[in-house]
Length: 201
Image 1 (cartoon, rainbow, N blue to C red):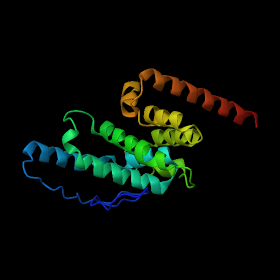
Image 2: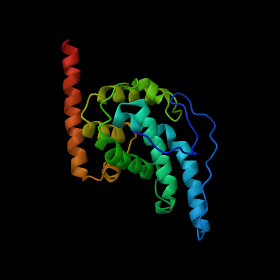
Image 3: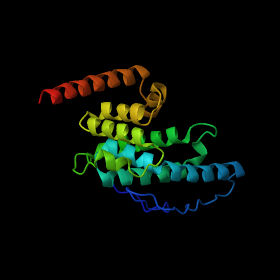
Image 4: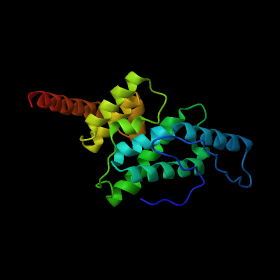
């Protein structure tokens, strides 16, 4: 996937640098509320970059595609800042944007079949929000789910790694809660079966 050049700062997968917020043009007739909202979104994007990149990686299995997904998500979020509802969870909105981009632009071009899925531990090294125990558990989950079908892999990541509720996962993926639950059940059965198989080997 290739996205247009962006003023949003480049970032490292291994360590976040100190970003400089991009300029957001003020169009004629823009309200002060809209400008404030755009500023809030810029700040929120900086905070959520590691989580967005990790989600892009889980979806695509490719570092470069995850990079492009995050850049495209940043651009779209800034362009549509007026569509964000103040008082709601920005991270959920950003996840929804990224997932929509993946469905509409990435999956349709069938570029997700490449090589280069990053080690689960590396995918979490730059996120200081997790304590050691949570980091280890999340890395184990990422490693186990990497072989799952995309539909199952996505709900497992959002529900078990990001800790979203079934309702929030359903909202992000635009599917019924029952579908979320059935995919999680299928994923648990698959992971449980893999675990028993590993013990026998």
